[in-house]
Amino acid sequence: MKTKSIKLLVFGIALSLFNVSCSSEMDTNPENLGATSNLKTTSTSKSSKKAKFKKETSLLIGRLLSKKEVRDEVLSEMKKVSPDGEVISFGYLLGKNKGIRKNEKGKLTSKLSKKSNLFSQSLAKELEENKEDYVAIRELISKKNKVASTSRYSIEEDPFSGENLQLYSPYNEVNGYSATSYDRYYTSEETEDGSPTNSGYYFNGFDETYIPSMDNNFIDSHPSFIISTIDDCDLEGGVCTTIELLAAGVPPPLITAPVLLTYSVDHNNIPDADIVSSRIPMLKINGTDWMEFGGTHQKMRIFRGSYEGGMTQNADGTISVTGLKYQIGEDFRTKRRNARKSNWITFNTEFDPDWNQSENTQQLVIFSLHKWRGSDEISAGVKYGLKKNDKGGWDSAPEATGAASVKFTSGSSIFRANSELPRRQVLSTITGDGSTGKTYSDGGVLYNVKSVGIVDYYYKHWYTDLQ
Image 1 (cartoon, rainbow, N blue to C red):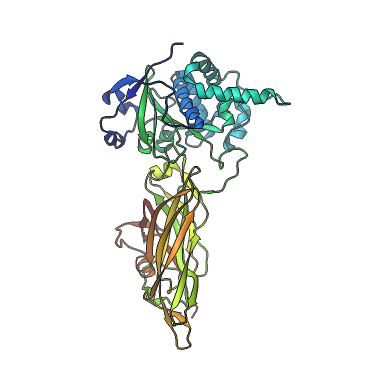
Image 2 (image 1 turned 60 degrees about the horizontal axis):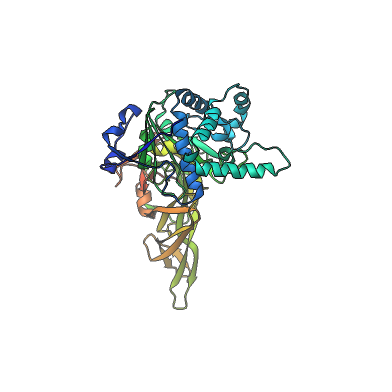
């Protein structure tokens, strides 16, 4: 089989391409973008062997799917094992009981009972006929075969299921694409450094075109297949460290004794002798700007910062206040579709069990989580309201009397946004348009929507009268 040539696609104006919104793959015509010189198929700007292996795999997949019968088989299997027909493991495609996703295990028996596996057969043929294009893949195959040959057990090794790879179609997930085939499509691979862009390939059934740069908006609006590593939450046998948030329906009512505040109030009227408990019922991520290229999920960690970490009275009668951070709920993730579509997702997590009057302001801080990142940190200020009473102690005050700093440090993450939240302002805009001009109807109440970075959210507050 003659090796297919690859043409280097040069974008005239990259941003204009990324801003194009397409409802069908028929809207994309690379010839309109211009194509120039040939590029060696195995070249890549990445230096790691793993990156080269994935880049070669994205080329390999593109060639395999150019055969309509293979493409139909893969898309059909995707629909069987994933709710939006968007993702499937290489292990499942190859009929292996390893490197598969949790939801695929129960369907594997029927997969193995089939007499033919066009994907597996075509993959083996392509690797054999175009060896020079798959140097990294063949090196890994050789390494795994050498390990298997010295084992006491007979193990049929392959580099794809062994590396827990999956094939992911962001376009399918975001757009709910119902057709069983594509005539034209793109391939690429998830970045390993959290970069929001990557190179890839375009296939139209005749030519292979190298694409020097694509971003999340592009692969969401064009049929595309991304090579990525199965998340531990989805891997059979994997240990999950995040909870899954789903697109919101009607949130269930909270059955509690405190009274839900369905109107705005003056925070001066709720002293520390009473209790205000605050929750964030739902939130909305407006787009994929905080996702790494090709990611299946947006992962986040949210903190609040407050002065209530401690207070020390100095010899001169002044006070020194320590700030502390508190994680709001657990690490969480939500599907790419929910971010791309800006769906409201159920969060239903307590922000502060007792937002005291003395906590004049608090910080809301958001980090996005990425498995290949180190730690990130930010310092932010909070204000407190404290006044000395007749007995020499300290009482809360509705006005700010001082400030403290809170350091937020988070591993495997990128700091994204923070917002200082005055208690006065938050309670006076429980409902209505407020300064944001946005509301969300929950139980017939139009709650004011607030924003931090690309995240929208709103509060529900419960008041308990203890006086």
